[in-house]
Amino acid sequence: MSTALVILAAGKGTRMNSELPKVLHPIAQVPMLVHAMRAGAVLEPERTVIVAGHGAEAVRAAALDEDEGATVVLQEEQLGTAHAVDQARAALEGFEGDVVVLYGDTPFLQPDTLERMLAARKTHDLVILGFEAADPARYGRLVMQGDSLERIVEFKDATETERAIRFCNSGLLACNAETLFGLIAAVGNDNASGEYYLTDVVEIARKQGLAVTAVACDEAQTLGVNSRADLAAADAIFQERARAELLDLGVTLMAPDTVYLAADTVIGRDTVIEPNVVFGPGVTVESGATIRAFSHLEGCHVSQGAVVGPYARLRPGAELAENARIGNFVEIKNAEIGEGAKVNHLTYIGDASIGANSNIGAGTITCNYDGVMKHRTTIGANVFIGSNTMLVAPVTLGDGAMTATGTVVTRDVEPDALAVARTKQENKPDRARKLFDMLRAKKARKQKDT
Image 1 (cartoon, one colour):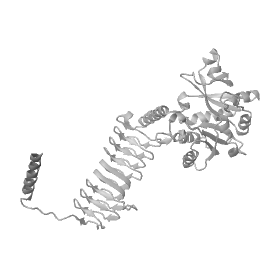
Image 2 (spheres, one colour; image 1 turned 135 degrees about the vertical axis):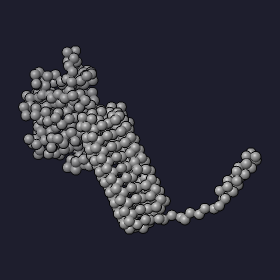
Image 3 (tube, helix red, strand yellow; image 1 turned 90 degrees about the horizontal axis):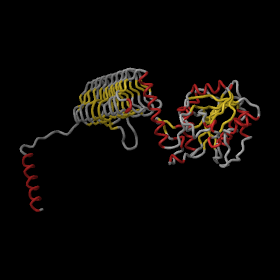
């Protein structure tokens, strides 16, 4: 049977104290909403509907950037969770499969949990996701009779026996689309908040004689993020899990707690990651590479056997071939570094291609920006770039070429040629001593006057 996702993402998140919609706050540099969408993607949904409210345009942009086929609908007034799901009714018109309702601020739901919910849907009309709570006091209790969910009881309304129940409601559910919207139509708002609560569908379903059950998952999967403290805790959970996974895959983390990973970081086994390394989005590091301390990588690819850092920065578009060397205080942006090439010290390489086994001396800069346009530098194989060379793009250096230290390269350099472009040195006999004598006398007069 086909599946549709409805992800609730309309809340302002007042406790976040932010202009940014709550679901767009990042965990591992990816918005929480995207984490929820990726979790649901395992079901290969026929339709995905995002219910937006506060900051709807920003939410829409993030959702469509992740899945251009998603539909974003607007909940103009936040009148409760049932009202929010009801905003997806038109977008799901004619859909006859199952609807799974997720929350955009619940980023840790695991794919196997969703699969078990749909498996339970085969024998039940309505499936609720529950969890065993370590501290259940603030949660609604799921009162079970065998595999049948009898009712959801809020803490304030629960008896002592019901309060002892640790099986709690997460708010997530799965149900046939037609059945779900029929149940929602029967939900009222006769409560202190005047809102339409999605949890009410359980009682309505039972009264209609429908089969209702609950599937259990770990409490961590249902962690909701409502404040900056929650966000920090959620990010810490992600980092701990991601580091543990890398260790299990054969990656050496010399100081795991100091390594920060993005949600899509890929690192091959036998890679060594030294302390205080930050991975931004879009990084792939192949097996056997070394990332030395205090380096920052984003949007780049590091091939097998390459060494990066310490104190290096790889920006988007950096492509390192096998056994390339990027050293301390080197920045690479939108550039290919060939096999065995070395860029070891105090250098900026941007919008460039460097051939195999070339050596880039300390203080080299590719001058790639003229104030309006970016231009490219092409360096062949086995090229030696002397220290403090300025390469004014666009410029090409052929295989085997060399630049003298302090050269400013403004024209192409032929293969095997030596480029020298610097001011002629002149030595002035005895001039240094006379200059120092004059300066010292001037300083002495100034001190005497004061």
